Structure formats: C-alpha cells, structure tokens
Image (cartoon, rainbow, N blue to C red; front, side, top):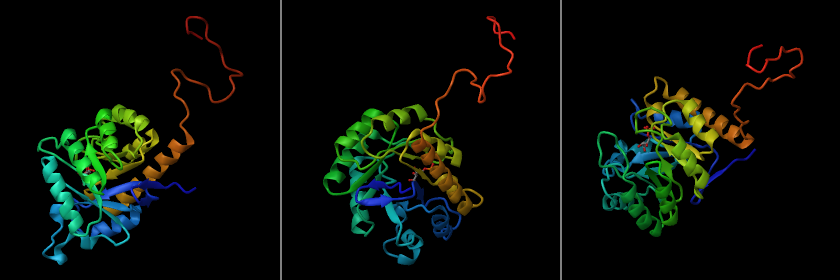
Length: 262
Ligand SMILES: CC(=O)[C@@H](O)[C@H](O)COP(=O)(O)O
C-alpha cells in the first residue's frame, strides 16, 4: 500500500523524521538514516560551519535526504527569520523548522513569536514547519498564515517523557488541515506508535535515537513502531469497552445474579 505524506513540494514514504544532535559520533548519522529509512533530518543552523566544509554537519547527511534546518538559538521572530534566510542562502533549501525559545529550563517554544515568524517566512516562499506548544488556537493561526505543517510538542525537548500532551494533540489532529508532526520528548518507540495510532501524520525524534546505546537499531525500532502505529490508525482501532466483552460466545458460562454475584 502506498501511503505518502506530502509536505510542501516533497513527498515522504517514511513518517519518522530525525535530528542530528547528541550523537556521540557524527558518523553514526548516515547509518541511522539508512537503518531507519528516515527521509528528513533537522539540523541546527549554528552547527553548519560555512567556513570549513570538512567540519560541516551537512557532510554527514546523504544527498537524497531532505534537510530541515531549524532556527534553534532564536529567541524572537526576528532572529528566527534571520536564521531561516541564512539557511536558505547557505544552500539548505526552503524547508525551515521554526524553533523560538527563550526559556532555558523547560525549552518551551513561544507560540506568539512563532506565528509572526511563520507568516513572514511563508510569504517569502519558505515551507514552514513550526515547533509549538500543543495548542489548537495557535495551530489554526499558523495554518491561516501559511504553515505547511504544525509540530506540537509531546513533552519537553530531550526529556524522553513521551506524550504528556496527548489529549491536546488529539484535539489538534482532529481539527487540522495541515499535517501534524509530533515533535520532542518522544522517548520510546511505543510512544511514537501511540502518536501515530491517534492519527499524527509523522513524529520527529532526536534524543531517544541519538543517545541510545545503539542508535542504528533504535532508529530502526522507531521506524517500525511508526509504521505499525500508522497502519493501526488506517485500519481503525476497535472501540474501548467499559466492561469485559467475551471473545467467544457465552455458552457454558455461569451467569451472575442481579447483585453481580455468580
Ligand atoms: C532536534 C530538534 O529539533 C529537537 O529540538 C526536537 O524537538 C527533538 O526533540 P527530542 O530530542 O526530544 O526528540
């Protein structure tokens, strides 16, 4: 079955997006991409060494992979816009993940500044993927100003705490007209599968893969979990029941009386 995710002018058949940070050896990135099949990876522009191509994170990423530069380090919309433009000038393409953070303890994104940056960059031809707090109203505003996807957080970046915003993300999924990519805090493949079962379009995982003892195997595990979650979503999950419902016909069972006793 062909199940393609379209973002901007690109099509993705793998719904795991990855990151380049925190690998103990940058040479692991290529193997992780191969094993996981991830087709898009995010890089922090401040890690692109423009003056020395040999020490450039881009040299560890195969050419067939879509690079998603992020504006990490930006504290307001002006800084994010400037970083995005530098990334495009540097040849990183027109995809941009907006990350505007001025809280170093929880690394919570500033939705208001993100909406401003999204409008300016979308108007300027960028494919904008904003990283945001899981808030429906912000997501709708982002859609209105031209975001190509929304990236609500599951839990704080690098926390590996999973889908702490689950019910809020569910509301966003049910009401969005652009792809919903769950980003940040996803610590285990089972949590990524949970997001996909709920109807997320993709998941972005960095820390849990990069800091695993075996990042290649973990990348593959995430990819498989995301595929399984996506298939379960498409197959439509069976409904939850309050009480037990016997799987076989009830013949031969003792029946309870009105007090619930057998
Ligand atoms: C790499 C990147 O963009 C992170 O800011 C992203 O949000 C992933 O978060 P985790 O590292 O928690 O997976």
